Length: 613
Image (tube, rainbow, N blue to C red):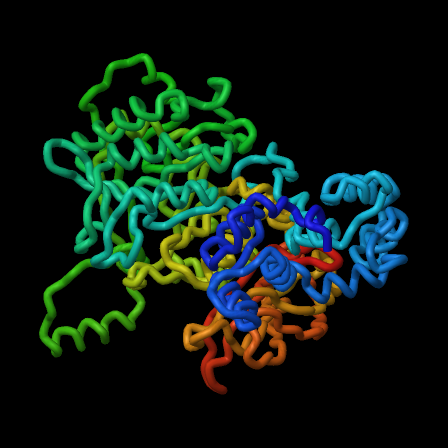
Protein backbone atom coordinates (compact mmCIF):
# COMPACT_ATOMS: atom_id res chain seq x y z
CA UNK A 1 0.00 0.00 0.00
CA UNK A 2 1.27 3.48 -0.84
CA UNK A 3 2.68 5.62 1.93
CA UNK A 4 0.13 8.39 1.31
CA UNK A 5 -2.66 5.98 2.21
CA UNK A 6 -1.52 6.21 5.83
CA UNK A 7 -2.88 8.93 8.11
CA UNK A 8 0.65 10.41 8.45
CA UNK A 9 3.67 10.70 6.11
CA UNK A 10 6.29 8.26 7.40
CA UNK A 11 9.46 9.37 5.58
CA UNK A 12 10.52 11.96 8.19
CA UNK A 13 10.41 9.36 10.97
CA UNK A 14 12.61 6.95 9.04
CA UNK A 15 15.06 9.52 7.59
CA UNK A 16 17.80 8.45 10.02
CA UNK A 17 17.24 4.75 9.32
CA UNK A 18 15.22 2.16 11.15
CA UNK A 19 13.40 2.62 14.48
CA UNK A 20 13.28 0.64 17.73
CA UNK A 21 10.29 -0.25 19.93
CA UNK A 22 10.23 3.15 21.67
CA UNK A 23 10.32 4.87 18.29
CA UNK A 24 7.49 2.63 17.07
CA UNK A 25 5.36 3.62 20.08
CA UNK A 26 6.08 7.33 19.55
CA UNK A 27 5.14 7.10 15.89
CA UNK A 28 1.83 5.34 16.64
CA UNK A 29 1.03 7.98 19.25
CA UNK A 30 1.86 10.68 16.71
CA UNK A 31 -0.54 9.01 14.27
CA UNK A 32 -3.15 8.83 17.08
CA UNK A 33 -3.43 5.05 16.75
CA UNK A 34 -4.68 3.47 20.00
CA UNK A 35 -2.63 0.49 21.14
CA UNK A 36 -2.06 -1.72 24.16
CA UNK A 37 1.64 -1.91 24.98
CA UNK A 38 1.57 -5.67 25.69
CA UNK A 39 -0.06 -6.38 22.34
CA UNK A 40 2.32 -4.03 20.54
CA UNK A 41 5.31 -5.77 22.14
CA UNK A 42 3.95 -9.11 20.93
CA UNK A 43 3.45 -7.88 17.34
CA UNK A 44 6.82 -6.06 17.35
CA UNK A 45 8.60 -9.21 18.55
CA UNK A 46 6.94 -11.30 15.83
CA UNK A 47 8.16 -8.77 13.27
CA UNK A 48 11.70 -8.92 14.68
CA UNK A 49 11.68 -12.73 14.44
CA UNK A 50 11.91 -12.34 10.67
CA UNK A 51 15.38 -10.74 10.90
CA UNK A 52 18.14 -10.02 13.39
CA UNK A 53 18.49 -6.96 15.60
CA UNK A 54 15.99 -4.93 17.60
CA UNK A 55 15.04 -2.29 15.03
CA UNK A 56 12.45 -2.32 12.24
CA UNK A 57 12.21 -0.81 8.77
CA UNK A 58 9.41 1.28 7.27
CA UNK A 59 7.91 -1.85 5.69
CA UNK A 60 8.00 -3.58 9.07
CA UNK A 61 6.21 -0.62 10.63
CA UNK A 62 3.52 -0.75 7.93
CA UNK A 63 2.98 -4.43 8.76
CA UNK A 64 2.62 -3.55 12.47
CA UNK A 65 0.21 -0.75 11.57
CA UNK A 66 -1.93 -3.16 9.53
CA UNK A 67 -1.91 -5.73 12.35
CA UNK A 68 -3.22 -3.10 14.77
CA UNK A 69 -5.65 -1.25 12.51
CA UNK A 70 -6.78 -3.45 9.62
CA UNK A 71 -9.27 -5.67 11.39
CA UNK A 72 -10.47 -8.62 9.24
CA UNK A 73 -14.09 -7.86 10.23
CA UNK A 74 -13.76 -4.38 8.70
CA UNK A 75 -12.21 -5.85 5.57
CA UNK A 76 -15.11 -8.31 5.15
CA UNK A 77 -17.66 -5.49 5.41
CA UNK A 78 -15.71 -3.25 3.05
CA UNK A 79 -15.31 -5.92 0.37
CA UNK A 80 -18.99 -6.90 0.63
CA UNK A 81 -19.94 -3.43 -0.69
CA UNK A 82 -16.84 -2.46 -2.70
CA UNK A 83 -17.13 -3.02 -6.48
CA UNK A 84 -13.40 -3.59 -6.95
CA UNK A 85 -12.18 -4.52 -3.46
CA UNK A 86 -10.19 -1.26 -3.28
CA UNK A 87 -12.71 1.61 -3.09
CA UNK A 88 -16.28 2.23 -2.00
CA UNK A 89 -18.29 4.57 -4.30
CA UNK A 90 -20.73 6.92 -2.58
CA UNK A 91 -23.70 4.86 -3.84
CA UNK A 92 -22.30 1.67 -2.30
CA UNK A 93 -21.49 3.49 0.93
CA UNK A 94 -25.14 4.60 1.07
CA UNK A 95 -26.27 0.97 0.69
CA UNK A 96 -23.93 0.04 3.56
CA UNK A 97 -25.36 2.80 5.77
CA UNK A 98 -28.95 1.72 5.17
CA UNK A 99 -28.51 -2.06 5.30
CA UNK A 100 -25.74 -2.53 7.88
CA UNK A 101 -26.01 0.60 10.02
CA UNK A 102 -29.83 0.85 9.87
CA UNK A 103 -29.61 4.55 8.93
CA UNK A 104 -32.93 4.48 7.08
CA UNK A 105 -32.95 8.26 6.60
CA UNK A 106 -29.47 8.35 5.04
CA UNK A 107 -29.17 9.77 1.50
CA UNK A 108 -26.47 10.64 -1.02
CA UNK A 109 -25.61 13.79 0.94
CA UNK A 110 -25.05 11.70 4.09
CA UNK A 111 -22.68 9.37 2.23
CA UNK A 112 -20.78 12.27 0.67
CA UNK A 113 -20.39 14.03 4.04
CA UNK A 114 -18.86 10.85 5.49
CA UNK A 115 -16.44 10.58 2.56
CA UNK A 116 -15.40 14.23 2.92
CA UNK A 117 -14.90 13.84 6.66
CA UNK A 118 -13.02 10.54 6.84
CA UNK A 119 -11.31 9.84 3.49
CA UNK A 120 -7.56 10.73 3.80
CA UNK A 121 -6.55 10.27 0.14
CA UNK A 122 -7.24 13.33 -2.01
CA UNK A 123 -7.66 11.60 -5.37
CA UNK A 124 -10.08 9.04 -3.91
CA UNK A 125 -12.08 11.73 -2.12
CA UNK A 126 -12.45 13.88 -5.27
CA UNK A 127 -13.98 10.85 -7.04
CA UNK A 128 -16.66 10.64 -4.29
CA UNK A 129 -15.22 7.34 -3.15
CA UNK A 130 -13.84 5.90 0.06
CA UNK A 131 -10.68 3.81 0.44
CA UNK A 132 -10.31 1.04 3.01
CA UNK A 133 -8.22 3.45 5.10
CA UNK A 134 -11.09 5.96 5.08
CA UNK A 135 -13.58 3.21 5.88
CA UNK A 136 -11.50 2.20 8.93
CA UNK A 137 -11.44 5.80 10.10
CA UNK A 138 -15.22 5.99 9.82
CA UNK A 139 -15.75 2.65 11.61
CA UNK A 140 -13.50 3.81 14.46
CA UNK A 141 -15.19 7.21 14.76
CA UNK A 142 -17.73 8.35 17.35
CA UNK A 143 -20.42 7.98 14.68
CA UNK A 144 -19.96 4.20 14.94
CA UNK A 145 -19.62 4.11 18.71
CA UNK A 146 -22.14 1.92 20.52
CA UNK A 147 -23.20 5.12 22.32
CA UNK A 148 -25.45 7.35 20.18
CA UNK A 149 -23.50 10.41 19.07
CA UNK A 150 -26.65 12.57 19.49
CA UNK A 151 -26.68 11.73 23.21
CA UNK A 152 -23.13 13.05 23.65
CA UNK A 153 -24.57 16.57 23.66
CA UNK A 154 -27.47 18.02 25.66
CA UNK A 155 -30.64 17.05 23.81
CA UNK A 156 -33.26 16.87 26.58
CA UNK A 157 -35.62 19.66 27.64
CA UNK A 158 -33.87 21.41 30.54
CA UNK A 159 -36.85 23.61 31.46
CA UNK A 160 -38.66 21.17 33.76
CA UNK A 161 -38.51 21.73 37.54
CA UNK A 162 -35.43 20.30 39.27
CA UNK A 163 -37.40 17.39 40.78
CA UNK A 164 -38.07 16.04 37.25
CA UNK A 165 -34.42 15.00 36.76
CA UNK A 166 -32.07 12.30 37.89
CA UNK A 167 -29.10 14.23 39.31
CA UNK A 168 -25.57 12.83 39.49
CA UNK A 169 -24.80 12.75 43.23
CA UNK A 170 -21.80 11.88 45.37
CA UNK A 171 -21.66 10.68 48.97
CA UNK A 172 -18.76 11.57 51.32
CA UNK A 173 -17.16 13.34 48.36
CA UNK A 174 -14.08 14.29 50.38
CA UNK A 175 -13.03 10.64 50.88
CA UNK A 176 -10.76 8.90 48.40
CA UNK A 177 -10.71 5.55 50.25
CA UNK A 178 -12.65 3.92 53.12
CA UNK A 179 -14.73 5.91 55.60
CA UNK A 180 -13.06 4.67 58.78
CA UNK A 181 -9.36 5.44 58.37
CA UNK A 182 -9.01 6.67 54.77
CA UNK A 183 -7.67 10.06 53.71
CA UNK A 184 -9.84 13.09 53.04
CA UNK A 185 -8.56 14.90 49.98
CA UNK A 186 -9.49 17.80 47.72
CA UNK A 187 -9.07 15.46 44.74
CA UNK A 188 -12.37 13.85 45.76
CA UNK A 189 -14.16 17.08 44.84
CA UNK A 190 -12.06 17.76 41.73
CA UNK A 191 -12.58 14.30 40.25
CA UNK A 192 -16.33 14.24 41.02
CA UNK A 193 -16.83 17.62 39.37
CA UNK A 194 -14.79 16.63 36.32
CA UNK A 195 -17.09 13.59 35.96
CA UNK A 196 -20.12 15.91 35.84
CA UNK A 197 -21.34 15.29 39.40
CA UNK A 198 -23.97 17.89 40.38
CA UNK A 199 -24.46 17.17 44.09
CA UNK A 200 -21.44 17.07 46.41
CA UNK A 201 -21.46 16.24 50.10
CA UNK A 202 -19.44 18.24 52.64
CA UNK A 203 -19.25 16.98 56.25
CA UNK A 204 -18.46 20.07 58.32
CA UNK A 205 -17.05 20.12 61.86
CA UNK A 206 -15.53 22.73 64.15
CA UNK A 207 -11.79 23.18 63.58
CA UNK A 208 -8.97 25.06 65.26
CA UNK A 209 -8.60 28.85 64.97
CA UNK A 210 -12.30 29.21 64.15
CA UNK A 211 -11.78 27.47 60.77
CA UNK A 212 -14.32 24.70 59.96
CA UNK A 213 -12.90 21.38 58.80
CA UNK A 214 -14.20 18.57 56.59
CA UNK A 215 -13.88 14.88 57.51
CA UNK A 216 -15.96 11.83 58.45
CA UNK A 217 -16.75 12.64 62.07
CA UNK A 218 -15.76 10.34 64.96
CA UNK A 219 -13.42 8.32 62.73
CA UNK A 220 -9.71 8.31 61.93
CA UNK A 221 -10.16 9.82 58.46
CA UNK A 222 -7.87 12.81 57.87
CA UNK A 223 -9.12 16.40 57.88
CA UNK A 224 -9.12 19.16 55.26
CA UNK A 225 -10.22 22.77 55.64
CA UNK A 226 -13.71 23.83 54.57
CA UNK A 227 -12.24 26.95 52.99
CA UNK A 228 -9.93 24.92 50.71
CA UNK A 229 -12.85 22.72 49.66
CA UNK A 230 -14.87 25.76 48.58
CA UNK A 231 -11.88 27.13 46.64
CA UNK A 232 -11.64 23.85 44.69
CA UNK A 233 -15.39 23.85 44.07
CA UNK A 234 -15.20 27.45 42.84
CA UNK A 235 -12.50 26.45 40.34
CA UNK A 236 -14.12 23.28 38.95
CA UNK A 237 -17.87 23.79 39.58
CA UNK A 238 -18.85 24.40 35.96
CA UNK A 239 -15.92 22.95 34.06
CA UNK A 240 -17.85 19.84 32.93
CA UNK A 241 -21.43 21.10 33.20
CA UNK A 242 -23.14 24.49 33.18
CA UNK A 243 -26.11 23.23 35.19
CA UNK A 244 -26.67 23.94 38.89
CA UNK A 245 -24.38 22.42 41.48
CA UNK A 246 -25.84 21.46 44.87
CA UNK A 247 -23.61 21.45 47.97
CA UNK A 248 -25.17 19.08 50.49
CA UNK A 249 -23.89 20.20 53.90
CA UNK A 250 -23.71 17.62 56.68
CA UNK A 251 -23.41 20.40 59.23
CA UNK A 252 -22.02 19.61 62.70
CA UNK A 253 -20.50 23.05 63.34
CA UNK A 254 -21.20 25.47 66.16
CA UNK A 255 -23.14 28.62 65.21
CA UNK A 256 -19.89 30.61 65.34
CA UNK A 257 -18.19 28.40 62.76
CA UNK A 258 -21.39 28.18 60.71
CA UNK A 259 -21.00 31.93 60.24
CA UNK A 260 -17.45 31.33 58.99
CA UNK A 261 -18.86 28.77 56.55
CA UNK A 262 -21.40 31.31 55.28
CA UNK A 263 -18.66 33.93 54.85
CA UNK A 264 -16.50 31.43 52.93
CA UNK A 265 -19.33 30.49 50.61
CA UNK A 266 -20.21 34.10 49.84
CA UNK A 267 -16.71 35.51 49.50
CA UNK A 268 -15.22 32.64 47.48
CA UNK A 269 -18.17 31.68 45.25
CA UNK A 270 -19.35 35.25 44.73
CA UNK A 271 -22.03 35.56 42.06
CA UNK A 272 -22.06 31.79 41.51
CA UNK A 273 -23.77 31.35 44.90
CA UNK A 274 -27.57 31.51 44.76
CA UNK A 275 -28.60 33.80 47.62
CA UNK A 276 -32.16 34.69 46.59
CA UNK A 277 -34.98 33.17 44.53
CA UNK A 278 -34.80 33.49 40.75
CA UNK A 279 -36.38 36.80 39.77
CA UNK A 280 -36.63 37.77 43.44
CA UNK A 281 -40.05 36.13 43.77
CA UNK A 282 -40.96 33.05 45.77
CA UNK A 283 -42.95 30.40 43.89
CA UNK A 284 -44.21 27.95 46.50
CA UNK A 285 -45.71 25.60 43.93
CA UNK A 286 -42.86 24.78 41.55
CA UNK A 287 -39.08 24.47 41.64
CA UNK A 288 -37.09 26.36 39.00
CA UNK A 289 -35.46 24.44 36.14
CA UNK A 290 -31.80 23.52 35.59
CA UNK A 291 -31.86 25.99 32.68
CA UNK A 292 -32.98 28.84 34.94
CA UNK A 293 -30.27 27.94 37.49
CA UNK A 294 -27.34 27.62 35.06
CA UNK A 295 -23.95 28.43 36.63
CA UNK A 296 -25.45 28.65 40.12
CA UNK A 297 -24.35 26.88 43.32
CA UNK A 298 -27.21 25.88 45.64
CA UNK A 299 -26.75 25.18 49.35
CA UNK A 300 -28.57 22.17 50.79
CA UNK A 301 -28.80 22.50 54.56
CA UNK A 302 -31.29 22.85 57.39
CA UNK A 303 -33.14 26.16 57.36
CA UNK A 304 -35.06 28.13 59.96
CA UNK A 305 -38.15 30.06 58.97
CA UNK A 306 -39.50 30.63 55.49
CA UNK A 307 -38.11 32.01 52.25
CA UNK A 308 -40.17 35.15 52.76
CA UNK A 309 -38.50 35.71 56.14
CA UNK A 310 -35.13 35.21 54.48
CA UNK A 311 -35.93 37.89 51.90
CA UNK A 312 -37.06 40.32 54.62
CA UNK A 313 -33.75 39.79 56.44
CA UNK A 314 -31.59 40.35 53.38
CA UNK A 315 -31.04 44.04 54.12
CA UNK A 316 -30.60 43.53 57.86
CA UNK A 317 -27.39 43.05 59.81
CA UNK A 318 -27.78 39.91 61.89
CA UNK A 319 -24.23 38.83 62.62
CA UNK A 320 -24.11 36.35 65.48
CA UNK A 321 -27.83 35.59 65.44
CA UNK A 322 -28.95 31.98 65.72
CA UNK A 323 -32.21 30.12 66.00
CA UNK A 324 -32.90 26.74 67.49
CA UNK A 325 -34.37 24.04 65.30
CA UNK A 326 -36.22 21.12 66.89
CA UNK A 327 -36.59 17.82 65.06
CA UNK A 328 -38.46 14.72 66.11
CA UNK A 329 -36.54 11.57 65.28
CA UNK A 330 -37.59 7.96 65.57
CA UNK A 331 -34.96 5.93 67.41
CA UNK A 332 -35.59 2.98 65.11
CA UNK A 333 -34.60 5.05 62.09
CA UNK A 334 -31.66 6.89 63.57
CA UNK A 335 -28.91 8.01 61.22
CA UNK A 336 -27.62 5.45 58.76
CA UNK A 337 -24.66 7.62 57.85
CA UNK A 338 -23.00 7.52 61.25
CA UNK A 339 -20.37 5.03 62.28
CA UNK A 340 -18.14 5.69 65.23
CA UNK A 341 -15.08 4.03 66.71
CA UNK A 342 -16.14 2.56 70.04
CA UNK A 343 -14.36 0.71 72.82
CA UNK A 344 -15.35 -2.98 73.03
CA UNK A 345 -18.10 -3.83 75.51
CA UNK A 346 -18.54 -6.98 77.51
CA UNK A 347 -19.99 -9.99 75.64
CA UNK A 348 -22.98 -10.15 77.98
CA UNK A 349 -23.82 -6.52 77.38
CA UNK A 350 -23.47 -6.97 73.61
CA UNK A 351 -25.82 -9.95 73.72
CA UNK A 352 -28.39 -7.91 75.60
CA UNK A 353 -28.11 -5.10 73.09
CA UNK A 354 -28.45 -7.49 70.16
CA UNK A 355 -31.58 -8.97 71.65
CA UNK A 356 -33.22 -5.60 72.27
CA UNK A 357 -32.31 -4.37 68.78
CA UNK A 358 -34.57 -7.03 67.29
CA UNK A 359 -37.60 -5.39 68.89
CA UNK A 360 -39.34 -2.49 67.13
CA UNK A 361 -38.30 0.83 68.63
CA UNK A 362 -41.36 3.04 68.92
CA UNK A 363 -39.80 5.79 71.04
CA UNK A 364 -39.07 9.16 69.58
CA UNK A 365 -36.59 11.77 70.70
CA UNK A 366 -36.40 15.50 70.09
CA UNK A 367 -33.07 16.74 68.80
CA UNK A 368 -32.35 20.45 69.04
CA UNK A 369 -29.74 22.13 66.87
CA UNK A 370 -28.69 25.74 66.61
CA UNK A 371 -28.53 27.20 63.12
CA UNK A 372 -26.73 30.46 62.31
CA UNK A 373 -29.08 32.70 60.34
CA UNK A 374 -26.18 33.67 58.06
CA UNK A 375 -25.91 30.07 56.86
CA UNK A 376 -29.64 29.31 57.02
CA UNK A 377 -30.44 32.22 54.70
CA UNK A 378 -28.20 30.79 51.96
CA UNK A 379 -30.65 27.89 51.61
CA UNK A 380 -33.16 28.75 48.90
CA UNK A 381 -34.50 25.80 46.87
CA UNK A 382 -32.80 22.92 48.67
CA UNK A 383 -33.87 22.94 52.30
CA UNK A 384 -33.04 19.73 54.16
CA UNK A 385 -36.23 18.44 55.72
CA UNK A 386 -36.47 15.41 58.00
CA UNK A 387 -38.55 12.68 56.36
CA UNK A 388 -41.47 11.56 58.55
CA UNK A 389 -43.79 9.67 56.20
CA UNK A 390 -45.14 9.95 52.67
CA UNK A 391 -48.48 11.09 54.03
CA UNK A 392 -46.86 13.75 56.22
CA UNK A 393 -44.85 15.08 53.23
CA UNK A 394 -47.97 15.21 51.07
CA UNK A 395 -49.77 17.29 53.67
CA UNK A 396 -46.99 19.54 54.97
CA UNK A 397 -43.89 19.55 52.77
CA UNK A 398 -43.08 22.46 50.45
CA UNK A 399 -41.64 21.88 46.97
CA UNK A 400 -38.25 23.40 47.96
CA UNK A 401 -37.89 21.02 50.93
CA UNK A 402 -35.80 17.92 50.24
CA UNK A 403 -35.45 14.62 52.10
CA UNK A 404 -32.34 12.51 52.66
CA UNK A 405 -33.13 8.86 53.39
CA UNK A 406 -30.62 6.11 54.19
CA UNK A 407 -30.57 3.16 51.82
CA UNK A 408 -31.93 0.58 54.32
CA UNK A 409 -34.89 2.67 55.38
CA UNK A 410 -35.52 3.70 51.76
CA UNK A 411 -35.55 0.05 50.74
CA UNK A 412 -38.16 -0.72 53.42
CA UNK A 413 -40.30 2.17 52.20
CA UNK A 414 -39.92 1.00 48.61
CA UNK A 415 -41.04 -2.53 49.46
CA UNK A 416 -43.93 -1.32 51.59
CA UNK A 417 -45.32 1.06 48.96
CA UNK A 418 -43.49 1.78 45.72
CA UNK A 419 -46.50 3.78 44.48
CA UNK A 420 -46.36 6.19 47.44
CA UNK A 421 -42.59 6.48 46.99
CA UNK A 422 -43.01 7.43 43.32
CA UNK A 423 -45.79 9.90 44.19
CA UNK A 424 -43.37 11.48 46.68
CA UNK A 425 -40.50 11.79 44.17
CA UNK A 426 -42.76 13.43 41.57
CA UNK A 427 -43.07 16.32 44.05
CA UNK A 428 -39.90 16.46 46.15
CA UNK A 429 -36.19 15.98 45.57
CA UNK A 430 -35.19 12.84 47.43
CA UNK A 431 -31.59 11.94 48.21
CA UNK A 432 -30.59 8.34 49.03
CA UNK A 433 -27.27 7.68 50.76
CA UNK A 434 -25.29 4.54 51.74
CA UNK A 435 -25.69 3.06 55.21
CA UNK A 436 -22.95 3.88 57.70
CA UNK A 437 -21.91 0.26 58.16
CA UNK A 438 -20.33 0.31 54.69
CA UNK A 439 -16.95 0.92 56.33
CA UNK A 440 -15.03 0.16 53.13
CA UNK A 441 -17.13 2.77 51.33
CA UNK A 442 -18.87 0.11 49.26
CA UNK A 443 -21.97 1.02 47.25
CA UNK A 444 -25.55 -0.18 46.93
CA UNK A 445 -27.30 -0.82 43.61
CA UNK A 446 -28.61 2.60 42.48
CA UNK A 447 -31.04 1.10 39.96
CA UNK A 448 -33.72 0.17 42.51
CA UNK A 449 -33.96 3.81 43.61
CA UNK A 450 -33.88 5.25 40.09
CA UNK A 451 -36.81 2.88 39.40
CA UNK A 452 -38.94 4.88 41.87
CA UNK A 453 -37.76 8.28 40.67
CA UNK A 454 -35.24 9.22 43.38
CA UNK A 455 -33.34 12.20 42.02
CA UNK A 456 -30.15 12.14 44.08
CA UNK A 457 -28.96 8.56 44.44
CA UNK A 458 -25.65 9.31 46.14
CA UNK A 459 -22.76 6.88 45.76
CA UNK A 460 -19.16 6.67 46.94
CA UNK A 461 -17.44 7.86 43.76
CA UNK A 462 -14.04 6.64 45.01
CA UNK A 463 -15.12 2.98 45.01
CA UNK A 464 -15.04 1.20 41.63
CA UNK A 465 -17.43 -1.62 40.81
CA UNK A 466 -20.70 -2.41 39.07
CA UNK A 467 -22.63 0.21 41.07
CA UNK A 468 -20.38 3.09 40.00
CA UNK A 469 -20.31 1.71 36.45
CA UNK A 470 -24.12 2.00 36.39
CA UNK A 471 -23.82 5.55 37.74
CA UNK A 472 -21.20 6.54 35.15
CA UNK A 473 -23.19 4.89 32.35
CA UNK A 474 -26.46 6.56 33.27
CA UNK A 475 -24.92 10.02 33.32
CA UNK A 476 -23.10 9.61 30.02
CA UNK A 477 -26.54 10.51 28.68
CA UNK A 478 -27.64 14.07 27.86
CA UNK A 479 -24.14 15.29 27.15
CA UNK A 480 -22.78 14.13 30.51
CA UNK A 481 -24.19 17.29 32.10
CA UNK A 482 -25.21 15.51 35.33
CA UNK A 483 -28.96 15.94 34.74
CA UNK A 484 -31.06 13.29 32.99
CA UNK A 485 -34.79 13.91 32.49
CA UNK A 486 -36.87 11.26 34.23
CA UNK A 487 -39.38 9.28 32.13
CA UNK A 488 -42.80 10.92 31.95
CA UNK A 489 -44.35 8.19 34.14
CA UNK A 490 -41.95 9.17 36.98
CA UNK A 491 -42.84 12.88 36.61
CA UNK A 492 -46.65 12.61 36.44
CA UNK A 493 -48.17 13.13 39.90
CA UNK A 494 -51.11 10.90 38.95
CA UNK A 495 -48.95 8.01 37.75
CA UNK A 496 -49.88 4.44 38.65
CA UNK A 497 -46.52 3.02 37.53
CA UNK A 498 -44.55 0.82 39.90
CA UNK A 499 -41.40 -1.19 39.06
CA UNK A 500 -43.19 -4.50 39.75
CA UNK A 501 -46.40 -3.55 37.99
CA UNK A 502 -45.54 -1.49 34.91
CA UNK A 503 -49.02 -1.94 33.43
CA UNK A 504 -49.81 0.34 30.52
CA UNK A 505 -46.46 2.10 30.85
CA UNK A 506 -44.67 -0.78 29.18
CA UNK A 507 -43.08 0.02 25.81
CA UNK A 508 -41.66 -3.38 24.87
CA UNK A 509 -38.41 -3.39 22.94
CA UNK A 510 -36.87 -6.39 21.19
CA UNK A 511 -33.11 -5.97 21.38
CA UNK A 512 -30.78 -8.15 19.33
CA UNK A 513 -27.04 -7.91 19.90
CA UNK A 514 -24.52 -9.69 17.73
CA UNK A 515 -21.22 -9.99 19.54
CA UNK A 516 -18.71 -10.08 16.68
CA UNK A 517 -15.19 -9.70 18.04
CA UNK A 518 -12.82 -7.98 20.44
CA UNK A 519 -9.69 -5.99 19.70
CA UNK A 520 -6.66 -5.42 21.92
CA UNK A 521 -8.39 -6.56 25.12
CA UNK A 522 -6.30 -6.23 28.29
CA UNK A 523 -4.18 -9.37 28.74
CA UNK A 524 -4.72 -11.53 31.81
CA UNK A 525 -2.63 -10.58 34.85
CA UNK A 526 -1.54 -14.22 34.91
CA UNK A 527 -0.18 -14.10 31.35
CA UNK A 528 3.50 -13.41 30.74
CA UNK A 529 2.71 -12.24 27.19
CA UNK A 530 -0.50 -10.81 25.76
CA UNK A 531 -2.87 -13.73 26.32
CA UNK A 532 -6.26 -14.12 28.00
CA UNK A 533 -9.27 -16.45 27.78
CA UNK A 534 -11.95 -13.77 27.33
CA UNK A 535 -15.69 -14.13 27.66
CA UNK A 536 -18.39 -11.45 27.64
CA UNK A 537 -21.35 -11.04 29.99
CA UNK A 538 -24.22 -8.86 28.77
CA UNK A 539 -26.37 -7.64 31.66
CA UNK A 540 -29.63 -5.68 31.70
CA UNK A 541 -30.50 -3.57 34.77
CA UNK A 542 -33.91 -1.96 35.12
CA UNK A 543 -37.31 -2.89 36.53
CA UNK A 544 -37.28 -6.41 38.04
CA UNK A 545 -38.94 -7.94 34.96
CA UNK A 546 -36.15 -6.66 32.69
CA UNK A 547 -33.16 -7.73 34.77
CA UNK A 548 -31.22 -10.53 33.12
CA UNK A 549 -27.71 -11.70 32.23
CA UNK A 550 -26.34 -13.68 29.30
CA UNK A 551 -22.84 -15.06 28.69
CA UNK A 552 -20.77 -15.68 25.60
CA UNK A 553 -18.48 -18.62 25.03
CA UNK A 554 -14.83 -18.45 26.13
CA UNK A 555 -12.18 -17.79 23.48
CA UNK A 556 -8.94 -19.49 24.48
CA UNK A 557 -5.56 -17.70 24.51
CA UNK A 558 -6.56 -14.66 22.48
CA UNK A 559 -6.84 -11.15 23.86
CA UNK A 560 -5.60 -9.45 20.69
CA UNK A 561 -8.47 -10.30 18.34
CA UNK A 562 -10.95 -12.84 19.78
CA UNK A 563 -13.97 -13.64 17.57
CA UNK A 564 -17.35 -14.76 18.90
CA UNK A 565 -20.00 -14.16 16.24
CA UNK A 566 -22.77 -14.92 18.74
CA UNK A 567 -26.22 -13.32 18.86
CA UNK A 568 -28.14 -12.47 22.06
CA UNK A 569 -31.80 -11.44 22.23
CA UNK A 570 -33.53 -9.47 24.98
CA UNK A 571 -37.15 -8.38 25.49
CA UNK A 572 -37.21 -5.17 27.51
CA UNK A 573 -40.49 -3.89 28.96
CA UNK A 574 -39.36 -0.48 30.24
CA UNK A 575 -36.42 0.65 28.07
CA UNK A 576 -36.59 4.20 29.52
CA UNK A 577 -35.17 2.84 32.81
CA UNK A 578 -33.00 0.02 31.46
CA UNK A 579 -29.19 0.01 31.51
CA UNK A 580 -27.03 -2.43 29.56
CA UNK A 581 -23.59 -3.51 30.78
CA UNK A 582 -20.99 -5.36 28.73
CA UNK A 583 -18.42 -6.98 31.01
CA UNK A 584 -15.32 -8.74 29.65
CA UNK A 585 -13.66 -11.29 31.93
CA UNK A 586 -10.75 -13.68 31.68
CA UNK A 587 -11.71 -17.24 32.62
CA UNK A 588 -9.04 -18.07 35.20
CA UNK A 589 -10.67 -21.37 36.18
CA UNK A 590 -14.10 -22.98 36.02
CA UNK A 591 -15.03 -21.21 39.25
CA UNK A 592 -13.34 -17.83 38.97
CA UNK A 593 -12.91 -15.00 36.44
CA UNK A 594 -10.68 -11.95 36.28
CA UNK A 595 -12.24 -8.61 35.33
CA UNK A 596 -10.72 -7.17 32.14
CA UNK A 597 -13.05 -4.29 31.28
CA UNK A 598 -16.63 -3.10 30.92
CA UNK A 599 -18.89 -0.57 29.22
CA UNK A 600 -22.28 0.50 30.59
CA UNK A 601 -24.87 2.78 28.99
CA UNK A 602 -28.63 3.42 28.91
CA UNK A 603 -30.51 1.08 26.55
CA UNK A 604 -32.10 4.14 24.93
CA UNK A 605 -28.59 5.42 24.07
CA UNK A 606 -27.63 2.30 22.10
CA UNK A 607 -26.55 2.99 18.54
CA UNK A 608 -27.64 0.71 15.70
CA UNK A 609 -25.56 -1.22 13.19
CA UNK A 610 -21.90 -2.25 13.41
CA UNK A 611 -20.54 -0.42 16.45
CA UNK A 612 -17.62 -0.53 18.87
CA UNK A 613 -17.11 0.35 22.52
